[in-house]
Each structure stands twice: as structure tokens, then as C-alpha cells.
Length: 157
Image 1 (cartoon, helix red, strand yellow):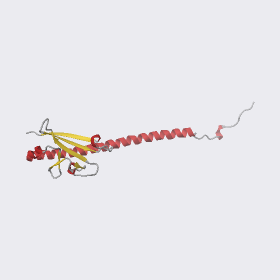
Image 2: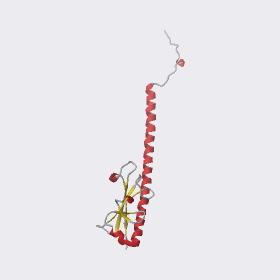
Image 3: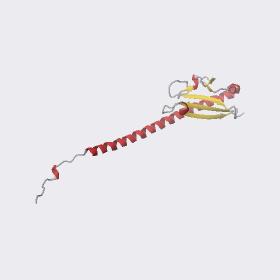
Image 4: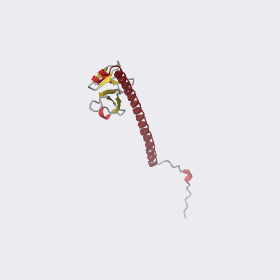
């Protein structure tokens, strides 16, 4: 009878190619998941910041509208087309460059840019004004597919 006397102590066993590939795949999945989660969190934070800036701009326009109504409501009620209130406090057409403002509320042409438009609800309640603000969202979508904020302001006599 022949008995093998070769001991396994002398052999070294390394990782096989399949084990290495599986380890790389697991690490890739973990890092990919962390990247996606971080990216979504960053986009959500940026979107919230933009919405906060838009709300600040809209509230400023409403306050200026209140001031104009208090001083001379004839000027405000004469506006039959969409308008905004310029930094100088005058009513301008919403197609004016002064209706596209930055995060600080002053006119701008660089992103992020918020477009302001105020309309009078002449069909429903003529004492109600609707402020609409649109901007290019974090994903680069502008216009109807971008972000939008709407505030309503009703005058009480």
C-alpha cells in the first residue's frame, strides 16, 4: 500500500481569478451606491436652496406690490399685461430684462436666474394678483419643465 506523505503545509494557496473579480464587483457596487446617494442628496439640497431664493424674491415682489397699492393703486390696476416691479420700484412689462433676477433680487443674465411675472385675475377677482416665478432647475430643465413658484395676493379695500 502506498501512502502519500506530501504535507499541505508546504503549499501556498492564493486567491483565484474568480474570487478577485467577485471582490472587485462587490466594491464597485458599494462605491456606486454611495455615489448615487451622495449625488441625489446634493441635488436635493441645491433644489431646496433655489426654492428658498425664489420664495425670497417672490416675497420681495409682493411687498413692493403692497407698497405700490398703498401709495397709488391706479398704477397697479392700470397694468393689464403681465408685469413685475423693477428694482427702482416702477412697474415694467414681464418681458423686460429687469424681471429676470438673481439670488440677490437684482437683474441678471447668469444662472441661477429667476423670471418674475405678476398678473391680475381680471376674470375671477380683479383684486387678486398672481405672482409666478420660473427658473431653470438643478437638472438644467427650464421653461415649463423647470421649477415654478406661484403666490397669490389679494387686496382688501
